[in-house]
Length: 301
Length: 301
Image 1: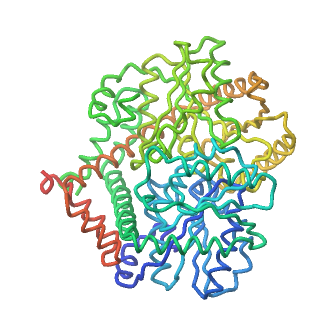
Image 2: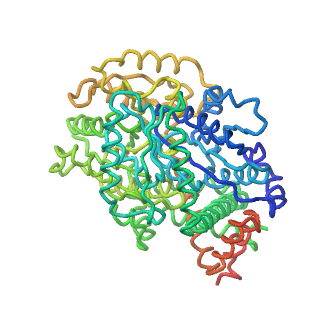
Image 3: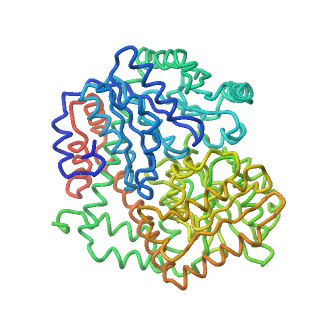
């Protein structure tokens, strides 16, 4: 996983070596705004999956880490109870801020954990918005976590969470306002979205209440995750989802490699292009054409 | 702007036509978690800039819109007071969910508004995390907005906001807990980040209190934005930042066009590649190589 995070030059060899050694581990994404208790929930889920003897991996993906390396350390502290369990692997992973970093690095880390024999991999993301949508694209089952007192229903809808959630979790369900969050959420889920996500066809996302730090509601939550996993298989959606995931990964990787090759080929011309576009003397499409031309083998070799 | 949002085939011609017609409008990014009052703050900022007769554009960028088109409509309702002002342009913009959509489409919309004579463009983003960091890369000055009761200090640090903010706004400053937010934030800003962002050298981000719906603190906020704009020019950072922005835009655009060309060249082979990678029979690097090979002119024409 360190090789993945550091974009090691050996990565292509590692990935090639893993061919035929993956078994298709289940992946569960856990998203939600800061403060809803995602890390505590992930810790409780690890305990639940461990009770049925599954080997569990946790990837805490922090898309902002190019700026603030190591910021998710606090989460790992909260998951200390699992630190000595050899069948639990917990890792915070920065996505480097490179073009599509989250999109190509996370699936590679998943592949490593899968090949290493982990049955379930939980992907926890920091923040909402783009990263939430991306994680939903990486996981088989996406949990969207909410909590009382974190902003009203309109705000929730704004963040686009309704369409990416396979299971909704109202955490801190012992707090004031929890019933209101469940009601608002259920009402929004009933009013059909104008553009339904293809994967949501035939699956009605349940709303589960939890108090993660006391492990309350965890059985119901794991039950809902299992039900979704069964539905993915029986509906044929799992294969669709994974083909889509693979295509996204490959295209993000190809795009990143293309830009890298073009940068090398352009050399110092990049600075001049940037200067001319920045000062309004060149349009971005003409500049992009230079990138596209630069890595043609006849010119770049 | 509609042409940009819809990725119109005429876009390259439009961008080429704008060459020489931009004057370098000031751009101010407004970020923060859902519920902190970003839209109200943006509305108040529009009023403030209008009082000095600046023409103001607002781009509300919603990175999640591929799923929930039109979700930010609520924001536009809140900015109704400016709806009839011909010198204010307000537009919600989806980033389409395409590879690097936010990265290449937003600068193009900015360029259109700049050429149309807008002096200041406010970029409001929905959500935190990746989109926040991306908006910080697009704007000259980035405001990070917080509010009491939206999660503790550790959560704020987790979201990586400290490093992207040029000016911090504690909105809803009349509410309980505002002083604590200001104290926590100031303490975190004082403890130097382990990896300082290059642009933050020589600039200490101020913390400004506002009650946006009553326009309280807006003069101080606009003053802080002006000060940062002056510093950008005097320190030479503005030119650096804009070269960096231009390079990011061009590379995101080139990458998107590369993938598009490769998709066309690969045709039905894409599905087979996806299937083989998804089932662990092919590694993603070998698959990516097919993309890189596919658009070589000799093979793709």
